[in-house]
Length: 143
Image (cartoon, rainbow, N blue to C red; front, side, top):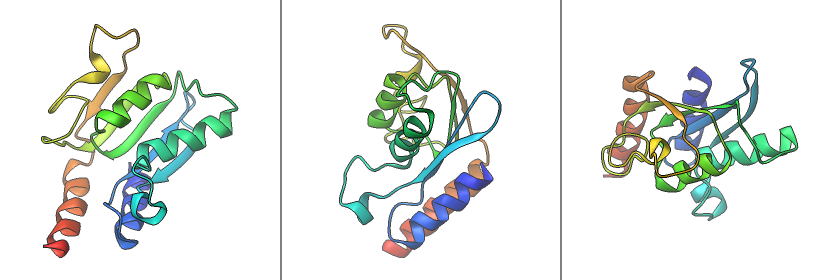
């Protein structure tokens, strides 16, 4: 999570919302990392999670990320939750909860919905205060 927080800081310094993410394989090896790049790339899908999963798929030579853990500083949104299910990510570990748009336990709980054919384990609140402080400081400067 410390590396994801550093990536989030980089995103914030470049004008993107400070969110960072890593994909870690079953052995604990970091396969890929990403940070928000929406502003930098003008791509609405360039959330940290999607960027990290894209890099992980290339690194592994497969879209299937089963057995991997997605570590992210902010609870994934609906788009990212859907993407991680499509990629078959086994576990999501995140920092700050997102009561307005979170889709892995807050506003929605897409990744554990029994109506879907695949589900992921969720661990929330890791380094929550650090992750929330990055976001709070970023948005305080925008207001």
